[in-house]
Length: 317
Image (tube, rainbow, N blue to C red; front, side):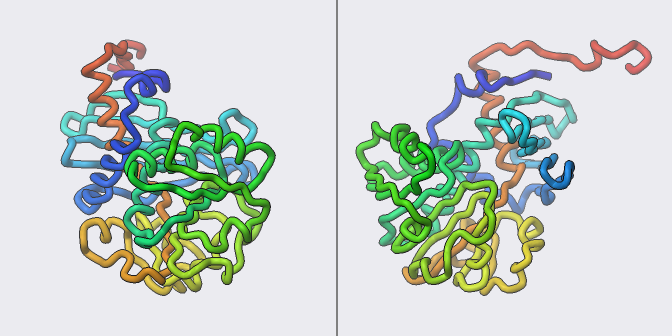
């Protein structure tokens, strides 16, 4: 069993567009896999949580457990995550790997794939809310997979976060940024809205601010419950994870995103449809990408094995 650290993964990290290809593979293969809904344990008056996401992918003989994102606000980072990867043929624990980079990149890649698949053909303006790692990963995946496109991006002014976000992407020629002061300026007349905030006190935008044809991707689901009631279509990753939403029975139309990519249902059918995407997160992405990273590391770098049995007293063996 190997320990794969953040630095090990960073050293072999592929281009963002590769992550887009990987998550598309996972989404298309979802119905041939075992993907239980994630399990959460809440503690300390619901301030902290511990999340587990098991999954099994027969096509690569891999199964595993994503632990996270477990949230402990008093720690740095507040959200922690790890991946346990097993060989499904012999049941061997192959590795425990740091999950931060994989989580960020697969989350951004799924959001980017949702946008590419479901946005209006005429979409030109993009808004990002919550400008941390997930938002940066999403934009990196969009830029790397759509190099021919120009992105007009709105950001909301908050402390110095918008300026830092602009600085991060200063070397890209196909982006223009505008920083606005209100949520209304951010949402009105915007074709694609990506929200990566993890906490929201109430609704972020009024119904009338959302233009026809908008594609809304609330990565962490917060702050857009009003859109559940009037958007034309809602898509999600695992129905069992979304059916618990208070407005689930009031969606006008719901399908899993996997059904769109496998041509089992239609995606966008009109430039006027308002589309909402809830990809809550599948551990299957982490297991598949972890497997790919593990294969790359196996070929390029020697990592010391750690044998649990060698550390146990003899009578346990």
